[in-house]
Amino acid sequence: MPKPYLANGDSVLIERLGYDMHKGITVSCSGFYAPQGRVLRYDLARKDLIPSLTSFSFRGKKITNFEMETGAIYGLSRVLGHKCCSVNAIVANRINKTHTLNLDKVMDELILKVLERI
Image (cartoon, rainbow, N blue to C red; front, side, top):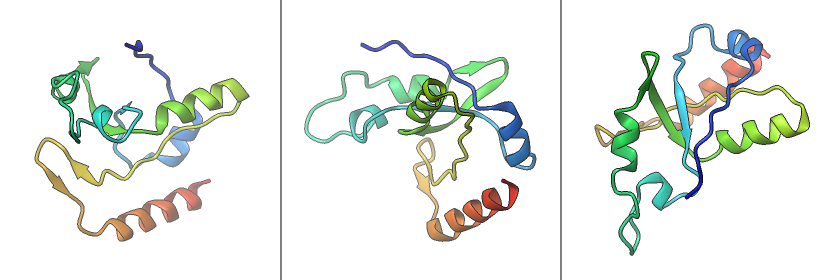
């Protein structure tokens, strides 16, 4: 099983883009089905993964986002010598089993906000 690793977004970009945005820990669970806690035909190898991650905290910060891309973007950025950070629209709450109904509006607003700030 792969070992987890930690990566930070660029602090200058984070400050520039997110002064009024919630900051938290994003976990990259690479893959759409099992790594995201979804079951297709087989049981999950780690049924406790998502629940254990939701109860995790580090220095008072909790995991606020599960997705598939940020880890790869941070790794590629580091290899190429670029600065990056991730900005995510939270569209589903796995704990409450709720999701955003106005996805297009949420994404459009986030894209415009980021473009204005860079």
